[in-house]
Image (cartoon, rainbow over all chains, first blue to last red; front, side, top):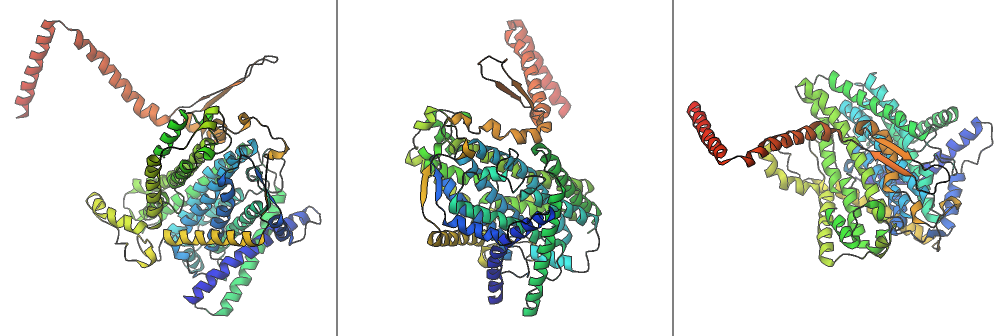
Length: 316
Length: 318
């Protein structure tokens, strides 16, 4: 019990501490790939601290929804991220919420953010919210189909059980798993507003989605939202790592060496994931906003196919 | 939600969202209740809608054990549709709340609207409290509903009340569990901690100014996103299903008329299921309508033949 609490607390702090680093790492890699220097690795931390020290400029037409939303968005994303087993399973609170609940928590965060985008009553906020909800209306079902596939295989919707199952001998190579992996990666790209869907590095482009929604934010509110989006990127990479590359995750009761191994493995996973993301983002161009539906529709279909295959092939 | 819609209707006399906006400033309590209702109906944790959705998903995940082949194909499709409809519901209610209550007032009526009376508010807040309670303490509600489920399904979930920490576990611990209360507390704790840390160490200064809007703020509230423009991307994506057709009528150059946008939607279930039924009823009604204008002889014959028919039917029956 004490160990579980400690692991859970570690997890809470770890995701918070690592998330900006991951973003900085991806940015650095992307800059290097186009032969540029790039900002230092720790730049996101500096940005956050600077933003925290700045004044908040609030529009006249903003209501309490606008001011409460950053806190709620950050808190829900933080909780969701800390419920994913990153380096060790056996978290204290992992039984409180399974994978479906984590997806839904992210949905709550998005709901609040979209409302905040509409709150000030500007055209940019509206365009961002509207497109975000369009993307979400396809990405969320696709994500749930992936969850279905995994939990049908593992017989559980708990992430820790799924990770344990994937480490076990009974997995083998499966078509469904491959389909689910592709679908999950596509959803992760869309949900984190990465390049083929949205560009995280731009403000002044009409195709923007996420950045338009948070255009009116400033100061500490903006810092919270930025931190939440860093956390979200970390969360998706952790989910992919925990489910499709579960090697090295410490199981409770293995002693401290196992935790060390788990941490190292987790760092390697994040590094590889971030590298792949940077390469992918550099290699591909952004697509028109109305082609996003094709992209995500494909993810949804892949997820559904994976689930259907399982439904058909399972004999039990 | 319906109470909230009623409150908005009595306050402004409008049902068209495009003419509202900014009501959160004039009706803060109604707006709060409406917001919780929206979150609950969009199946967001920690409210009750999510618990139901979660239980349904768990049931779907158990269904490969079903023996029928047709069901095996149908159930995952149903699951996908359920997930899709939950996401679309969230989009719909962001629009409903965002356009009606947030933003800037689009008409004078919305600018002058007032809060409803205390009784209506109380009614709304009782339901809001129920939404939250059912969301964070689902075990009690599941147990309370068990006597209703028993004759319907012939089985019930195991009793949930005495489980640790009020977790709900429909099948087995290792399979799945959900604890609304803990999750709610966890989120509240994280949010509280954030607020505390931010307010202790971060800058507290706040300035009010005009909206930034990327440097091009337009004072007119017409420039806001409207309900129609908000749902336009979704309409395009799912347009095939509804056979949506958009037409923009632009006035010729030099003409100062406003451009018009026409949107035509078809509801497929309505067209396929209800419309033929309605046509049938109409057709029958038209025919039967003639019966009202018969002569007295006609009526007598009708009554007599009806009686004979009835007797014959009875005779055949026995």
